[in-house]
Image (cartoon, rainbow, N blue to C red; front, side):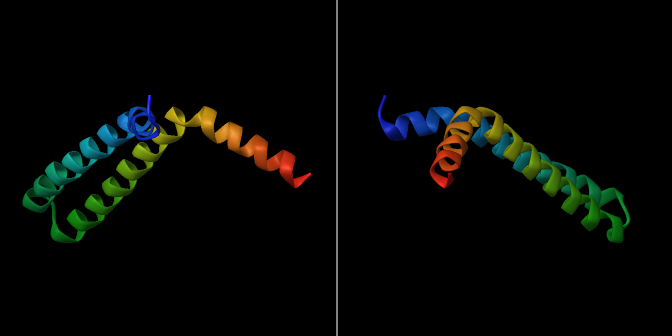
Length: 80
C-alpha cells in the first residue's frame, strides 16, 4: 500500500469520529439554543465541542499507538 493510502487507512476512524463529533455538536447546539437559557447554551456547546475534540484525539491515539510507541523508543535511544 502506498504511503498516502496507509495514512488514510490508519486515520480513517479518527476522521469518522471527528465528522460524527461535528454533527453531534451542531445538533446539540441547535437544541440548546432553542430550549436552554442563552447563558447556558453557549457554555454547553463549548463543553461539548471540547469533549468531542478529546474523543477524536483519543481515537487517533489508539489507532496510532504502535507508531507513537516506535517514535518514542527511537527518540529515547537517540537521546541517550
